[in-house]
Image 1 (cartoon, rainbow, N blue to C red):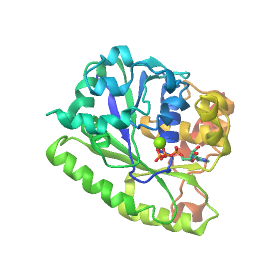
Image 2 (image 1 turned 90 degrees about the vertical axis):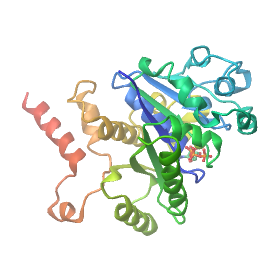
Image 3 (image 1 turned 45 degrees about the vertical axis):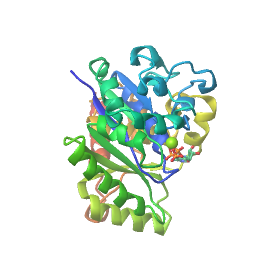
Image 4 (image 1 turned 30 degrees about the vertical axis):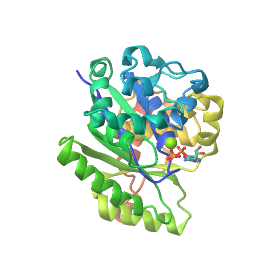
Length: 300
Ligand SMILES: Nc1ncnc2c1ncn2[C@@H]1O[C@H](COP(=O)(O)OP(=O)(O)OP(=O)(O)O)[C@@H](O)[C@H]1O
Ligand SMILES: [Mg+2]
């Protein structure tokens, strides 16, 4: 079986692309899936957040894209449960050097083809721009996951991304799909957050994930320890939100990998409710699933 390849993309900076890539993959890996994180951002934030010392990197994605290293040699184990193809600042140079190659847009796709059957899920963390590196990610991906911070200007970058995706579909990768839009750093008390959220629902409809990623200091602290938030503090709200997002993407676990206390905590993760559901005091799908599981556990 070949891996699902998900590019985590938004040309807007600081919207939690890296935080989402690292912690969603850490959550998926805890479901027993074989996972690879590909860092194609010269900032190397996903690599640092995964415990890689990018200043001492001998081989990484830069060498792979230029054909100077085999992808097998450049992939390393992260500090978490997934593997990583790391990036260092020298990757910035690849943007110019890649122009020499006729197949410049397909360099990542062709490199990943060699390892795609060794993984179930491959996540690609992309830079905050639409350059040749991002195009390589979109050309290699089966799906795009779009993190959006619900604030002013949040929607502006999105039209650019949708246009680029259309161009990539036409010219490079007809199968590319939107996996979904995930709302990050969510603060339900903020009226702007609620308004942007409403706009997202209007434009992307069922493509907007119900799981909300709340603002959580543990998510911001974890990278400086070279760890995912799940490794740093499994039970903080941020980690539990990314576990809920993994469940929304993969489907529920039927309790195979979680303890009863995990289930109780999952119930507290905010998920969006429709007005009707709110009025009736009903739980949304995930909340209802968690509730069902808890009731079953109680009955045992
Ligand atoms: N839910 C959250 N709660 C609190 N802080 C967060 C959350 N998500 C992300 N952050 C913090 O916000 C900052 C930006 O996040 P991140 O680096 O993941 O964004 P990015 O989209 O990858 O940025 P860039 O465009 O530069 O690559 C980081 O300092 C990160 O720790
Ligand atoms: Mg980033």
